[in-house]
Image (cartoon, rainbow, N blue to C red; front, side, top):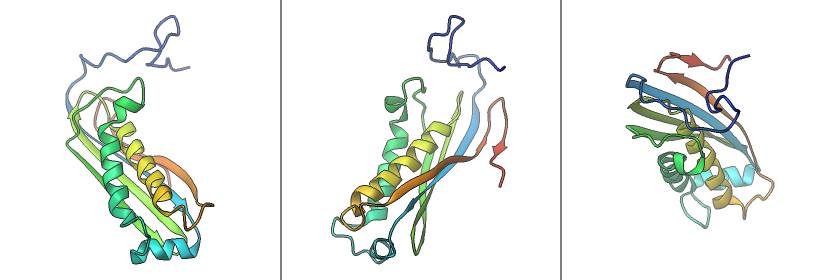
Length: 157
């Protein structure tokens, strides 16, 4: 079995020492989905949600969350992000969020991309909950990562 890097020899949690790792360009893409009623999806698409522009607020929330990942996930390293993007694909029954995080550093940005996608989805829920309290958030996952010692990885379709 592969040894978990976030555990020391005694099984205690630890922050991984990345000081000997090379600085490389790294990118991670994560996605997730929120399903909702056709009326809620239409209101978001048409900009008719009373709280304001749902997707604009969700985009900013996702970017802000990526920048605060180390404050939320205990063993994540605080890393300098080069870029974070949050994109949306709307359809008749929901929104798919895709978040991309980039850095040049000694550790990856998978958690930053996942945090951005998750927070954007939660923000959509918050902004539109008056229209549909039964919305369902799911399918949050890493789509791909590049850079670093382990190289590139892409989710199998």
